[in-house]
Length: 355
Image 1 (spheres, rainbow, N blue to C red):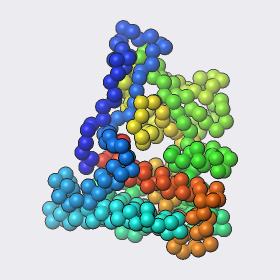
Image 2: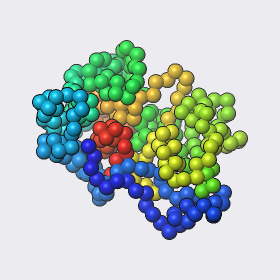
Image 3: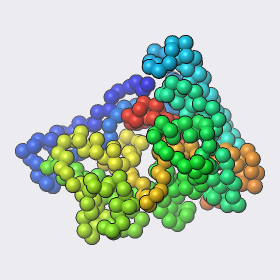
Image 4: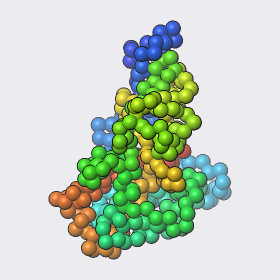
């Protein structure tokens, strides 16, 4: 569904040197971010990403690209019309949200996100989704307010990622914010503790060695707990004693192999960059790690529901003169920018799209 220039890493004179095998010196790094996918170059990424959502709202555009494989022609035509309408609604709700204050905007933002997810779901899964899929659980403290998973759009989305979510599984607003890559520094500034997202600097050498420098919450990596903290890296890496660095067990001399490996292990920087900067989420045994898009969606659902039903929380959400209000404002700006990008990536089957 995502047309555009296929992602090709930038080529530089010293980059070409990095692929000359007879110069395979341990100290010679491969140059690049290891990002792959489709790159939409724009001076205004926010405007560009929503313009791409609006493009899916054009029936003619969708009809030319959507090829149903599981439903008859008449039903496929209906899905195209439905998806286009939902995406147009997503854009209009987003535009309306930008025109009002924080006492209202979270609700409009949620409706925008819900409609975008439903439109993408219709095209990806060839069926419609109804019901929110979430239920608000209030608490006396803002960040303890939660949403539990019910039948509906959100649960349908999780099902596409093959996730087994326990019935009535609940996520708090604080949990969501702790997992969101783009506000990791803001979370630390407000709460005085790190979020659950760690920064990873990838070092790949042309002799095939790979190292992952993880800037975590407590300095050096304890060899007895790092596999519990980063289970997706277990069996692939080993800790470099006395450091917060993991080394890959196998050699990966080719740039494309490195890119494939890091994209399977880490979260990408959603901004196009030349730096090999990636992210990883800390976990504990038994924790349920949701997809990256899900934390934006649940957080906006909670905030939207609170401004609609729980008036006592509105001032905390809308007051940018308070730290909590400032953080919510930062989150909503990040959500407006990156949620549609994550939705487009999901619609495209996981191929990254950068703006």
